[in-house]
Amino acid sequence: MTKNIRNFCIIAHIDHGKSTLADRFLELTGTVAKRDMKHGQLLDTMDLEQERGITIKLQPVRMEWKGYILNLIDTPGHVDFSYEVSRSLAACEGAILIVDASQGIEAQTLANCYMALEHDLEIIPVLNKIDLPAADVPRRAKEIEDALGIPATDVIAVSAKEGTNVEDVLRRVIEQVPSPKITDDKQTKALIFDSVYDSYKGVVAYVRVMEGSLKKGDKVKLLHTKTEIDVLEVGYFKPKYKPSSGLACGEVGYVVTGLKDVSEARVGDTIWRNSDKSIKTADPLPGYKKVTPFVFASIFCVEGDEYPMLRDALEKLSLNDASLSYEPEQSGALGHGFRCGFLGLLHLDIVQERLEREYDLDLVVTAPSVSYKAVMKDGGEIAVESPAALPDRAHVEAVKEPWVKVEILTPKDYTGVVIKLLQDGRGISKGIQYLSESRVLVDYEIPLSSIVVDFYDKLKSISSGYASMNYEFLDYRVDDLVKIDMLVAGEPLSPLAMIVHRKEAHSAGSKVAKALKELIPRSNFEIPIQAAIGGKIVARETIPAYRKDVTAKLYGGDRTRKDKVLKKQKAGKKRMKMVGRVNVPQEAFMAVLKR
Image 1 (cartoon, helix red, strand yellow):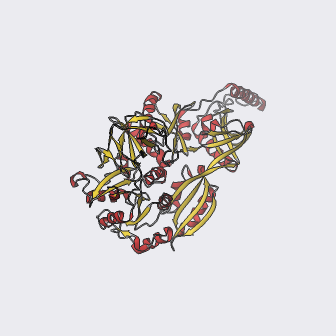
Image 2 (cartoon, one colour; image 1 turned 90 degrees about the vertical axis):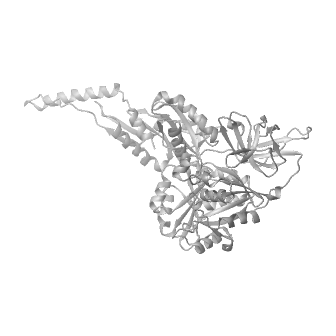
Image 3 (tube, helix red, strand yellow; image 1 turned 45 degrees about the vertical axis):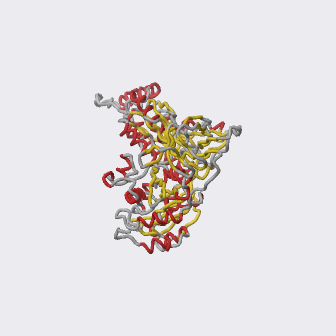
């Protein structure tokens, strides 16, 4: 039976037609009736996925065709969701690599392909969208051969939209993708590659059985979290849940655990069952690292009394999104909120939109920042997730910032402007490679803080939308980083503190000072706005005072009469400045902090 199972996933750059091809597979194999295919992208179940045309969550489905069982996992294509892709790869023996025949290889295509090769998967190259007038199959096939070393003759040209050659792809899957390896049945090991929270069933773990078998009623143990559970139900994805009597070795399906918290059935954990009572524990399957967020932003409610609703919403959202981390935060400017960790900017955008749409909340999201590490003089290291949390410089030996490796694929006409953009962000060149006579792969190392806010938008605008990028985390590196405090009338505003490179301190400080000058209302005394590194002021703006014309009532006479009145006014202003307090309005904080 196992020799007829094929486990495979689809990997590609965003918008190259993964979900459309998956739809054609479902139609061809009769898994979903024609009348149920109400809309395209059947596996993209979220409204957001449908609207934006992107896949956010991986989605498995089991198809039966010509006596074979085909388990497909449809994966996301955006760089922010590459952790979802790595999880699918660990549960498969093969991968269909899709490339758009009109656009060619993109940065994420390369990254996903290398990831698949690391997992020793059989790769089936497919050129999609051959129905488009701009499609150039021979040239794109040659590009795949040059970049990935896959012979151009092996590439299958398809149109997922029209269904051309889709059968050839399934045939190739059956011929080339190896069947799962059979192991002894003494113990059962199943890898959890995803887990979701179902309001009726509790936590449902998506599993790939690596050894042995699982059935309803089995007593099993999760090896990482040491949780013991009874299996309440097992089954397949068709693509909805379809209960079955059991899951055999090599099969992909779901297990209803009855747990109430997704964190207890962590992704990458191993479900283990042992028939030999003398063996008390086993080694977990080589799973994945725990997801570490790189981008941090604070989320506050516009109305303070919505805070409990925000807390509940984040709790529910994190049940289905294991990569979202959050902890409570209190800001003097914006009240109570949460400091959240994300995988990237699209992830932040999606979470914000889901909170506003699914839970009907009005939110203020602060500008994203990255996490730093402070190396203390006593040798310890502290993670710094917001600039205000950086300890006093007297105790800090050095500050480390995260660096990433960036790969950018661009038409060769834009190479110069792309390199300038990278160098402006303190990037270090690691190589330039010509994939064809018109396309260049630029390889750089760059601080994550340089690409986290609007780098992607700038890249798209300078390259007329043609360049694509992929980044992966490298390490933390020590650099000349300083904390800038914003002072208004000598009082520091902690929510506006920031950590920047010393070279950029003046421009960053003066940008915020100028914004505050526009937003803080004038008073009866002048208000200095300063950006300071410790005791050193690096930028300053001044809001002038309101002045009453005290000399208007004087007419004629000696000049000293005017001087006397002006001197009296000056003394009053000075006294007022000493005792006066500046109330920075909420709008000023919002305008500066908001993205």
